[in-house]
Image 1 (tube, helix red, strand yellow):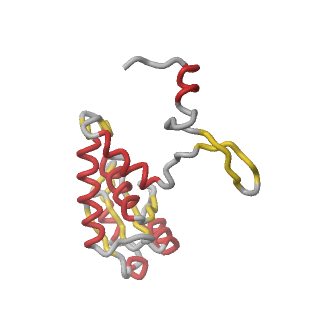
Image 2 (spheres, one colour):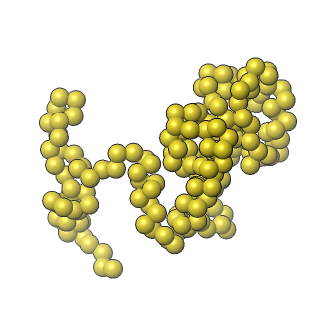
Image 3 (tube, rainbow, N blue to C red):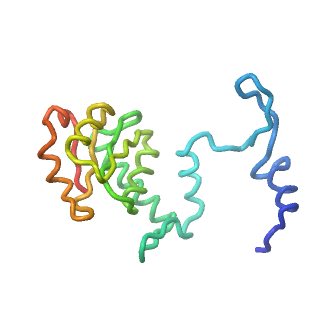
Length: 171
């Protein structure tokens, strides 16, 4: 398709009926011009992205994942989380590096309305114990090894009450 220049895009997109329609709204007692067709949540954005089908969603090293493949993986992981007792409002701790699995797991939580709790991959058992205790995470998702660090081995050093009533899953 032909590309629009800036003026053409501004005339079409924020105009009445356009995908980025702008209209008046009261926000915090102030009259503002805002986008009127904004998705109300990240979940809506994600669910709407299914329309992109076989377009590339994510590239990681040599791996390419399409929107269709990502949606299939997100549904599968979300079902696994539900089977493990995770639901809306539950906190799920992620202790894994930036990989496609991280994105898929995050979007599975978005799909369910669960809350993601990021755990820095440089943290060890003391920091993990603190984050789990303070966040109230119901599940901990662990990457087996990263930068030579065996994450599961660090779990054995976590004070057992910090892991009580939590489900621990290995990807």
